[in-house]
Length: 102
Ligand SMILES: [Zn+2]
Image (cartoon, rainbow, N blue to C red):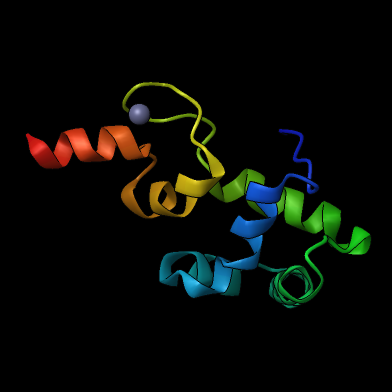
């Protein structure tokens, strides 16, 4: 399992906007821990920090849904591109653009 640090601003922004993305929202709702996750997203949006009691659940969820690296270039996917990567099958913004251009 990867180690997620919830103090990172980009990661918090990603978590806070989770239910604005249809694909992410569906994954969240399908999770066994949907209630805890939904509350955590709400908490991040309101307080700009992560609730400690939900950390384990969120770590597991993120580990489950986030591609560890880009399917195309094997590079790390930045949090700002993660929602897109989850929707497009695990590609970073750069590879996504390249595929669209081809
Ligand atoms: Zn890539």
